[in-house]
Length: 236
Image (cartoon, rainbow, N blue to C red; front, side):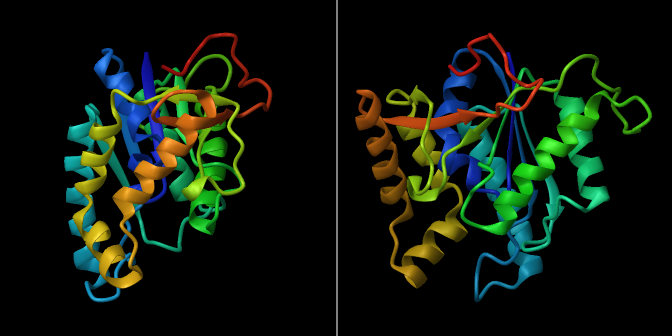
């Protein structure tokens, strides 16, 4: 299988679906990760231009840890992600056409911050456009129906009820190592917000595991918009 995960910021995929992506990679599937925002405003001391470069490097390292084939940076500034930005939609459409995924994983439509919700909508809209012949990108258009989408968990699991769970017990440590690669964010949140983010993510994974009877899990729900519903079992 070919898996495309589209997150907003460079660490969002590691937080919400890193264990699942590692599980795909371990069984031999092709995993491509993409983040739309560059995370350039995720610090009060490091200036945006410098931070954007730091976070792009961290994302590449995290992707290697998870086993991703590639990590793509759309490079939109924080707070500027918009479903109405045609340039961003065109770039995301190109990513989908390039990746040729069997499944797309992205943010929930009701996630806690605007950039995340806009990423979800942009992913939905751009992936719909992949089959439109006269919507021109470098890669060739798809044929057939739009790709199935699964929405990943919200931060802290707030206001999200999974319908599908993935047992990540065998990849939880890989997930956390990938998250730790985002050193600029982990250190900043601990110093500034007094949040041990890796511990928080482990706890949330354990909570989802309790819900489905395994030590650690990640939760998802499918996009039920026609024609994205599939009879195939797409999660690992």
